[in-house]
Length: 547
Ligand code: AMP
Image (cartoon, rainbow, N blue to C red; front, side, top):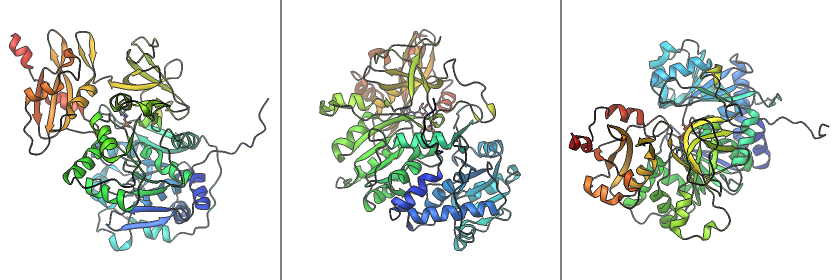
């Protein structure tokens, strides 16, 4: 028997039209690429998204066409998200930090018909023009006064495009399974692969992401998504904020400690989200002047890479800001787990609480998780056994765009995340490593993430990476690569002494080297493939000694 409830489609346009009615005066504040702070309301944003929707039709674009963006987090980018997806086109956020040849590859692979470009990325597009022959329109996201002299043919000025269009537009209704947006994985090997979200998957994901134990956004919040809109949907904040009526504060291109701090304080931000590198910069900025406080911030969501224990502790004990450690991936829209404490855990002594908060958190409703051995057998949820982390759910990719990578699901429909993890009896998941980064020593696995986190706990260490180096007896042994904080002198012996007692004895790195900087991926993760390449001929002193 079928239920008798209204079968209304879940559509992205409804998030913004809801906000335009029920939170119409709530602000969207942007540090613009041109410089000044811009502010307007949800009602303004929705009206301009309708104008843009008309303008796109005027350019000859149709339902199902793919529209690319090379853009920072700004109100204009938000208008594009809604103006494009809201009328059934597909909004393709391109990560401008990818290599230029990868950007050209994905714009062509996605068949982008138009690309919206922030001023910052105009030179990049100019360089790529010979490879972007199928893109019919380039729109530069600025006003007439700031339009650059450019070799982009027939470059359109965003403000003229929007303001020249009528706002007489009704958001259309269509099947909720229609594609809404597209984001490519920032694959470190091979070509990036396209993850194609739907209106339904996005709506379900955003509703759950707004929950109290997840991002926890409400109408009294002011949220600052530092995580870029081109990185896995900015973790759904630009979708969830209008649903909840939260004020949005967009950082534009400025992600340095001083700029972020200024926005946090002047705009009364209560919740913010980004990868650990951003918080490293903010905390270093705050450290420079002991007197700075975070007067309105209550919650910081940290994900994308493991949040170091010292970072979680500093936010909580020095600034009174609670940290929610989150894990997910582009293929998961992206949220999978969040580390909100369960009843009673908040009363635990600090060290025990931190043990829990260093884990990547519990699955949110709708995300099923299991860990398996190499043969696909499920492993116990005892917090000790670790295996391949497999996931299933309504906002998790079932296939990549155009079938790239073939069948990506196991026989039960689970997707292999490529992460190795433990699951504990309380449901908390802890990432041990990426399957390809884990160090295999004497048949056992060493977590490079755990070693890195322990190393950055030293006050003189700015950043650390651990990779496996060939060892004739053990197969691989860990090499610790450290970036010192400016003006600090820490050496190998002091580093190893610091680690003693914090990690298992047999995990102790065989050597420590110091470098000026570490390579990162386009989404701010350590680029281990490059490190392995750089250190491929490295001989550990433990081998040299044995020879
Ligand atoms: P991306 O699709 O670029 O967001 O990358 C997803 C991958 O980032 C995951 O599969 C993990 O390997 C890694 N990742 C995301 N969040 C965390 C976290 N909190 N701790 C450790 N690794 C993480």
